[in-house]
Amino acid sequence: MLKLLEVRGVLKREAKRNKTNLQETETPKLWILTPTASPEILSGFNTTLETDSLPGIYYLGSALRTAIVVIHQLPRTNETLWIRMLGRGTVQKQAIEELAELAPSHPFRRITLELLYNLQKHLGVNQEPEDKEIIMRLAPLYQQDRELAVQEGKIEGEILLIIRQLNRRIGEIPVSLIERIQKLPLDKLEILGVELLDFTNTDDLEAWFNQNQE
Image (tube, rainbow, N blue to C red; front, side, top):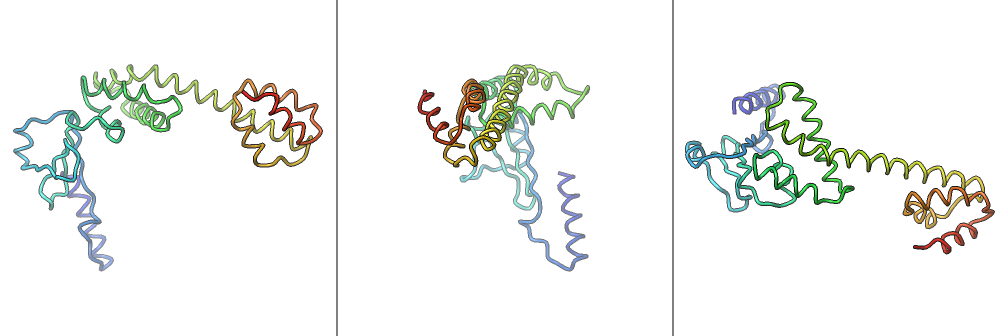
């Protein structure tokens, strides 16, 4: 809260120098994340629950622009998944299981793994036991994600190579055919990369697709 007041003071001084008014909505809001919080703690800060907010988010007085997020009280939704992974015990375990159930190529899964591993690097040797535990739990998912990224990199490179080769052999390719090439799995791309050497026009490419439909 001291940091929030310090930032607010800087903004007010800047507004004064610029002879402008600092609107309350322009000041930052402080979000305090905690795995748990007892009723006594929440009562001590005189927090309130707002009807249009998620369960587990307690607001202090409006002038303080501060809220306490009690992670173990948050609902189990995709929107709260990342924050719940910063919880403890069963809450964290459930969040990791939900993350593992997402498709390997799901962007939310990839972003989450990258963020948490970047956090590990920043923590360095000063990690708490709980931080090390979550990294160990995520290690298999992270390895799977890296392997998938390598595989996708191979596919993307193969697609670009094939399109360049086709453009040189049979001229510019219609967008519709490029889109069909982009949908091919790696094994089909490798086959096309060899057989395109016999193509003389786009009809040959069309015929190849007709013969190699799944």
